[in-house]
Amino acid sequence: MTARLAIGLTGGIGSGKSTVADLFAARGASIVDTDAIAHDLTAPGGGAMPAIVAAFGPEFADANGALDRARMRTLAFSDPAAKAVLEAILHPRIRDGALAAAAAATGAYVIYAVPLLVESGTWRSRVARIVAVDCSEAVQIARVMARNKLSEAQVRAIMAAQASRAERLAAADDVIDNNDGIDALAPQIDRLHARYLQLRT
Ligand code: ADP
Image (cartoon, rainbow, N blue to C red; front, side, top):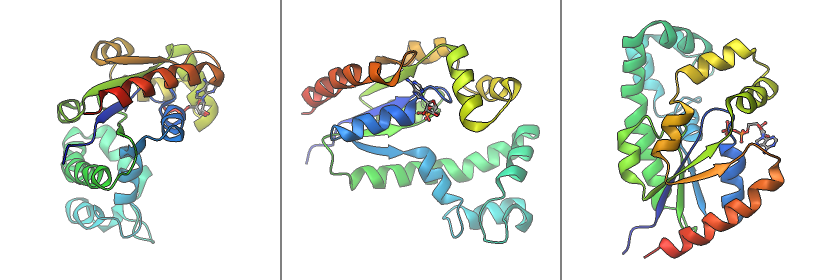
């Protein structure tokens, strides 16, 4: 059996990854969303919760057994060693979950939606092409402030922990310009979708 074509979709917070992923899905791609997998792993009964409780203590689980996200975010931001422990628990499980989802996918090809793809060597080596959703920092900040009800400083702090726009563009094989309205996306997605269909062996 030939392995299914795998594309990596990335972009900074608020760049429009989810919006773009939906448009590819509507054209027949299978989307494997690593953020959603990470969320499931830390939901009540999630596969990462026993290891998280063992490493950090029961106070990091809420009454339902889900990760206390606010508590973990505070710890991980202030303590790099704790962040590394959390990532060592989550990353292999996210990878395994993503590969299992891809193996079960029935779409024309698989798109891994990975916010930190450019930052991760393992994801880069697993995909045939990287497509980055790009917009200016001003547009990005405005979208995340509106969507998440955050201050500009809070959005900038999140962006500072991610690859820069220039780093992402340098790593990308394909770029989707999402500075304009939603209508400007469809022709770009159509073009890339046609190319990805051709790339299948
Ligand atoms: P990401 O998944 O990269 O964080 P989203 O796809 O969720 O980004 O987009 C961030 C926010 O901006 C969402 O509220 C989305 O509806 C909005 N958005 C995305 N693209 C556009 C666009 N071209 N025009 C206007 N709003 C957009």
